[in-house]
Image (tube, rainbow, N blue to C red; front, side, top):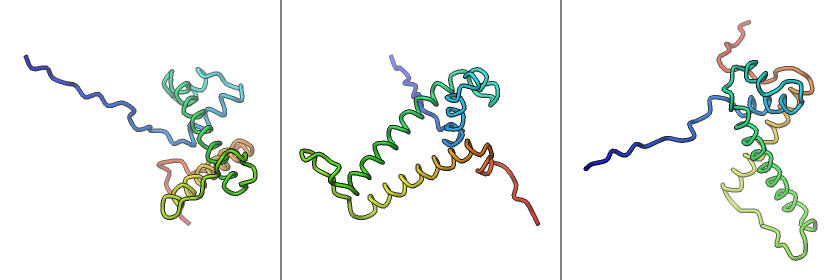
Length: 132
């Protein structure tokens, strides 16, 4: 008897930008709106905010660990005498890691500026450029 094996794809690509997810989660953390109100405001599924919160926590942990490693590389005396300080890799891998760190920092800086100044800085997807 032949059985057909169904392949299930998990983790379909997100249709929302990470900056938008951060904005919604930070708005939720502010306590002004509940998750249900945010879901209605942004037309999201009922479990999206809970998933995004887990994503946000992991993203923040990753950013903090990257920042800590960066500090240890720059300030070896901060590391304990028992802990070896990792030496920076040479070549493209190190450049890629630094570029990713820079992107995370810039995204966070833009998110903070948008929240503080209460303005949209990023261009919305699908908008047309203005003509002079």
